[in-house]
Image (tube, rainbow, N blue to C red):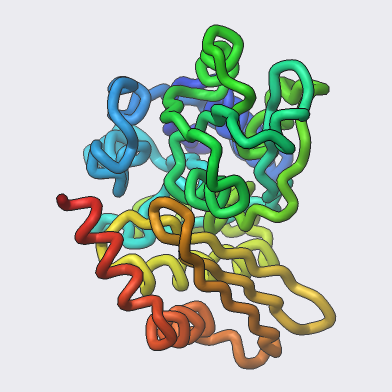
Length: 306
């Protein structure tokens, strides 16, 4: 009798959509599965900004524990929520083909406020906040927490002009409103739009099965972005953005670091041949740190700890 693969997931509508996508892809390959819902600290505590929760692993920790306890065989995550250093014994088993990596602004009535000095924009992301303030320094950015559905409702219920979301999340569960604009000037979070499957390092059978779902070009791109993030952060949550795209046997890598208030930014652009991508994310981060990034990161850590 074939093993039924237990898929661990958070219980939000988006998380369940992602888990069901994995279940469908497994079924298409001839494997049976069942979905196991496990809530995370990030889903339960909604009255504090993410960076005050100890953001590393806030959406993944409970799934990691369930896997290490043998309650699930694999876990499905929005890859941008996954810490760059996985727990001992847990590995990346597959990355699905990336969806839309852009951020979008969902607005209330119209976009006239973009040309006005005062506006209120909601987001729970330091990266989005810093980039918005870099472009619109006189606007006010307020914190917004919760799953996609909760955040859309909060936008309706509050006197805000708009709120920033990842396009992929709203598109996946058919909640993308007509009143939105694509923020193509905003550099995304590392791995935004990608779905990751994790499994136990010792579970060779599961790893072999999951490898059949892996999308190689997506894996190359997001691994570089996450390597860049890991090298830049040094354990500190900061407004860091990165995007790697593959064109004509090269990876076009863009990275950025912003001060918390958005007043300062460092940007990086590199074209890397595919046969030279080993450690490329780390090398790009080292270049940024050497050219003012280290000082900016020190200032960010000082401000966040004050």
